Image (cartoon, rainbow, N blue to C red; front, side, top):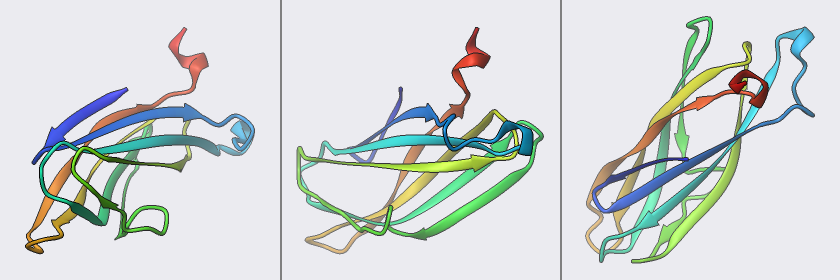
Length: 128
């Protein structure tokens, strides 16, 4: 698990290769990841946007940016957390991701950026 804290927001990532959805002969590899966002600060915050940077092992790069996460813009109270699971298809069996969340304090509408730690997308058979 990878974890980083920015502006009193802790972001942790766990990855899971998805062999059932992957088709190696067609160069389609699917990885899932679970993100846990914990508000360590005193202010209630809302996640507005996400911005991902994604590489596969051929060096192919892409960016994904948009509102919220999995269709939601969660509000996270002090000492509470929000967790979601999403996925990333790759053309190679390994890759890397990192990114940012745009968040705001609900009482002041002050926006700030929170880092998402860099993490590897690796099938278990590559770790032998």
